[in-house]
Amino acid sequence: MTRKEIKTPRAVQLERYIEIMKKYQVPAKLTANIMVTDMISIKNKFPGNLIILRVTLLFLSLFCLFLHESKGETMTPLTLWRALDAVTAQAPFTKEKIENILSIHLEEYTNPSNRYWTFYKSPGITLQDGVTLTSVNFSFNKDVYNSGSVGIDLEGACITLDQVRKNYPLLALASLPRGESLEEARYYSSEFPWGKISFGFKEKRPDCLSHVSLKPS
Image 1 (cartoon, rainbow, N blue to C red):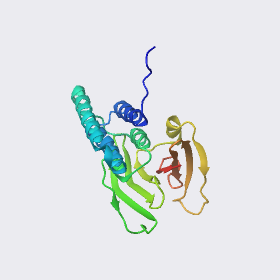
Image 2: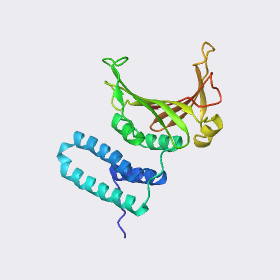
Image 3: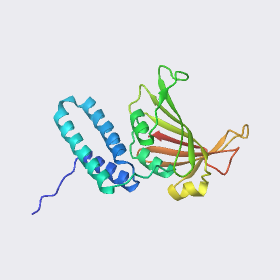
Image 4: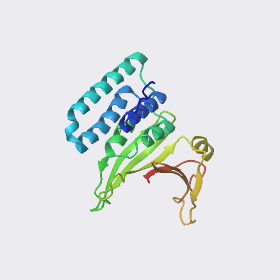
């Protein structure tokens, strides 16, 4: 009888990283950075496994180098949907993961950071599909493990509700504006094992997506 291979949760997660990064043509260097960041978190939790960590990082580096060289081309920049897929694949979210995926630098801003919450913000970037992320926000509760949340404000190319539904077919209406300001928005949300993703359409531009938030369960 052939012995059935049993994969560890870590091996399954690494395979998932590689599959998603290859599917969406994320640069090999970026793929390595994301997985290395995750491995460093393992080292901090389990310092006794340093030798295993080094061997794993060496394997990942060689694999990503092979992947990059075999393609012989510059990888495709992120679109909004590729970016969201790459970010959600990295749940639970951390500052380092968001920075690596979106190639941004998140800086802490002291107001409204306080003894309970820490807030970070990055200037905007324009994606391949013409969507501009005018700001990317990351926050976490200091007293709650894996509480990182991501908020993204959008402008530029108009993303309609129908386009959102094509990528998130189980979308449901979550909240409505109260009619007090054009800055208020309709929100549609979709639930996943990792948490919830919400899409906001402001009253001042009701047909175009203006905000995306990702919150852990």
